[in-house]
Image 1: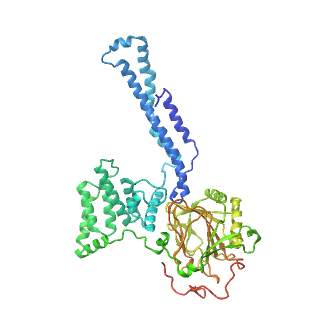
Image 2 (image 1 turned 45 degrees about the vertical axis):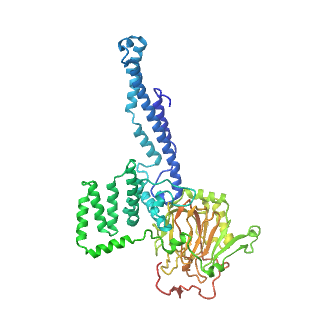
Image 3 (image 1 turned 90 degrees about the vertical axis):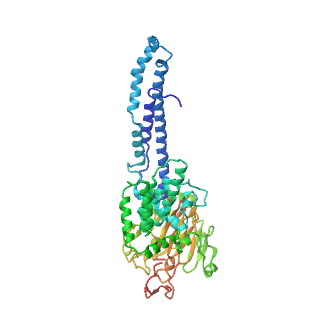
Length: 556
């Protein structure tokens, strides 16, 4: 690296300040709910890292100038074998000494008084849009996503910590002791104590490895053990929590609250019978490592098997509905299930249309909401982690094109369809099992059943990306799993022909394990659909009797 000139350090400072003036997207809370936001952060962070690189360069050049100031004096005036009085008597050397003590010192003084670190912090915070950076909600959301993915896909902590979470081509680095500790701490704060304990145990193991190998330690063993005793107690194993607390005391007798915790656990144990203590310890030792063993989770893992009669009905065909507009390019129908009728429609849009739809939606993406039962109100909820936008036809010329295309290939009337909804899923993004229609055995939401248009008769779900791993659409009551294929759409009817809700259309969006998931939904209402979906001559909704549930609903 070359020497810094007298004004070089100032040039570097101004170069850093110039980076600040670049426009960047402001970071807001709930970034974890959309991968598009996460990817935008990547671009922002590249700018931040660029600032820090320039800062490091400036600091090095600053030190080089100061070292040169020291070396210039020592090499000329501070040599033991040279008579310094004679040296300084030379007029050029005298000039250099005066220059050293005046103009050179002024530059050094300026450098010493310039805190490049403070300048760097201000620039980074400006680039990131907030002095608070990402909110606590984002950290908790990211941690909860790890739990969700472990639970759904039965992934153990060691696999995650060693960068083997998926079998895709994209890998992650091994997590450090501190990384594992932070995962355990946040899971404990969220109340996921089973997972917290396992992550803290991984952190403890890595701490001990780092200690043996004389690696830097960025968290204390006592802190790891402290959260371990916390979660162990909340899981019910008081004797183990006591043992961990005593271990903390042996490491650091003055650790905060350790003596109080020991006294508390001793008191609790004194009030428990030995049999009760032993039963808790036994139950704790037999606790399953992972709990992702439900129907929904198994379908997300691709373990569902369709019933024989459903497999017999599967077929593919080309459909034109007798419409001349489809003669040259018929709709590619794949029958996935009959009663309820579920299809995959292939090659329904061009990639260029997909990109325009995504671009139109980006500026309006907001945290996805769910309907509050029995009302016309919506709220954010943990059951749905994504961001979405409803696009009117005025948003972009591609939207009316898309609406017309959906009407053409489904043969349904789009005049009674809702606005096109675009959704981008976040870290571990998912949507728990739910219905699209509003007349269910659990609730008849008259606020959402439009007086003119009726209930949602059909759902058109377009996959706008392939997904590396996870992100399937599953129907738990049918043992059915549909995998995202870019440019294809899942299409199904939500209602029986008598107009009542089909309970077997219960469906869910599985967590995205790796990759990006964009979808668009078109919910089509009942009115004017008789030509394509005529009413049946008799009621055909076995879940209902005279418009009311036959029996009390069983929540799965």
